[in-house]
Image 1: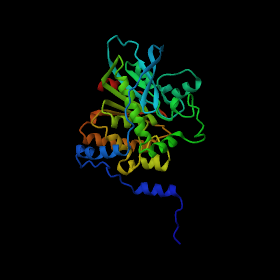
Image 2: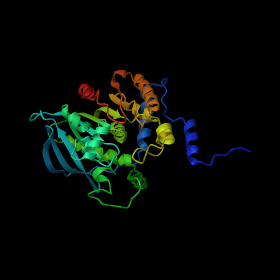
Image 3: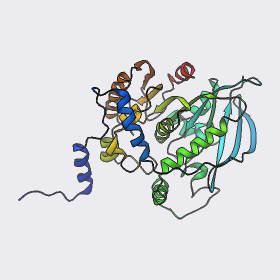
Image 4: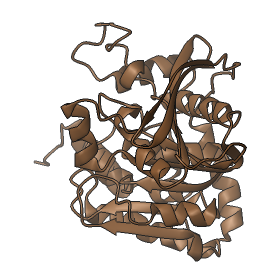
Length: 347
């Protein structure tokens, strides 16, 4: 008698093993033709974007920390919702001078943007920064860039369960998934909402003294790498992109390892592209990829498979000099070995 499979997990794994995305990259096809067909199809998976609103900014406080000038603002980023906006200014920024600015995307974790932007006020936040070299928003400002960040929905101050929100509706559940379900009911995704909020934060940053809106970059770790990818795809104001520890294959980290959530996905995305193709759609803009040799979240074998496919896409685009790799001997975290030189070169 034939052995039948009753596991839906095994079903999806077998589907992934047989799957070939519609826009899988083929070096025999001209890059421009491939991108022209793939990019709008990929962006369409995000669904609707919430409309833009005036920021109505409120400066809450300004202080100095480790030689940097820092500010906290409250801004409106969409209908019915605001965000706390943090910005770090280099100590040597002169009056009237405008510097390149980097949107620093946080990843998963209860503290959201705080460790990224240099908050080291508690042992738990310091441990988060230390474990993942996570304070790139602080370090890049020390290196001379203006840096800014907000919390994505479901994280930090925009987690419904945390101060100042105090909701226990999703107790014991992942707010990434709850908010994704909410979004799809309105024809949106968490990604489309977060991208809209990230664009709003970027537009506000460009109105501030010291920010050169023609020299913008974006960087982020893990879930922040997800947001970095999508901010880069959706907003061409970003002239250079650094994706940190978010290189892999959907069949591996998604289907096999179930290492994803509602923050990272869109309906039909894998039907259209795998992750290396999504990253390749950044081309011809400069892209720096960080991969941790000992990353326990995105395995080295699959991460390097993703990068090798990405190399082929940048080669087809004729811009191999615009793709860089920081392969660092660390865990799931920011390598930090090439970032300053990379953004200095391209911004």
